[in-house]
Image 1 (cartoon, rainbow, N blue to C red):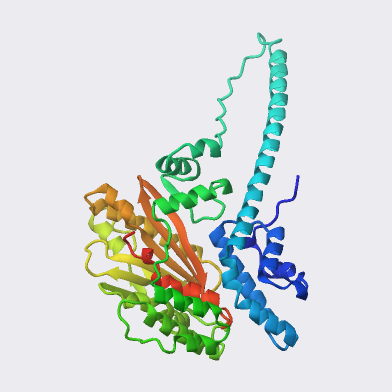
Image 2: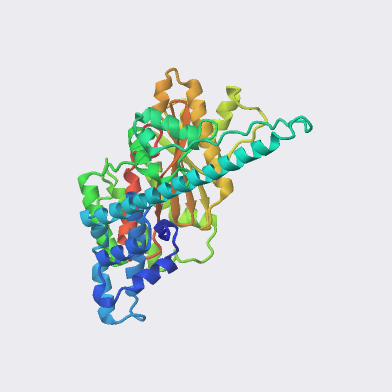
Length: 450
């Protein structure tokens, strides 16, 4: 049996760099490097793989652009290839490489499954023979030895088969996934490896059907501007790209894009985003305020609250007597509120941490609060089907990494899922990653309504 390759999204950059550095200078190009990664690693899904490839290749070319460590020829070639990374990753040939990698994994899993079934049949045959022999032996002295009645063993749960799963409609598939992989009516798609990979494509289809994703809604001028930003490899080009934007433009995200890019240029000028042990308040003032908070604060009909603010969801649940009065209120780092809809005013919540390590406490706090929010909305809505058009969303900053997760009730099932994970790049040479983060401004599903 062939050895299983490690997952790319779980590999450290040092391990990945060994693969990339094995390519000779003459073979330097984005396609060659992606093919090398495909030979060495298994890919998870298309969207996540593209994000990982963009991050990995950007970091690799940036390391080759350091003049005091590489030759002039290497720096020139790396700089040129870095400008093409974003377009290559989003090309049809790369899509084929990713899909072929995933298809090979499915084939390997099928081969392993056939081997396991064969082994199970042989094992069961041996067990049946032993049981039969034991029964014959025990029957000899049955009158002298009292028969002991063993408690019936619980039957082993059957696996959810892909063939059977495919025959169900989307509602039936959701019900089956919850039955096999959920807990007490809750299906958590945000936890890694909670559901077998063979259902990955079906889960993506379910997310689209039930609006559990973040579709891009970019205007033409915004899309063109972000493409230009993705090609930039220094702060001078970044600043020049947004310099002529009118900051008073209405009905567009262009003023936000200008502000975000210029703020990053100031941070890059003095290398302020490098690891210097900054605390939580520093990130809020120097980074999150202009790059994250502003796009919400400027939304008409909404307000934002910052730093140690209380969620109204707990208070509302107490008023409806759906939870005990002694349940403590929940403090949050950021709340985005709707000022016109009574009872459904908390649209988005966010927690911040100045470290790269995930806070289990914050993760559980936001997960429980999202769940309480959709339960509360269900108690005040007159029509149950209206609940399928509402979702409770939370964000979590770990230093410069942003994770967006949402919760929704569909057919009485509470579903948690990850919508997007992006990072604010430390380096000015990562134009593609900058454009990816800024594009979140046009994600409409960060609000309640879907």
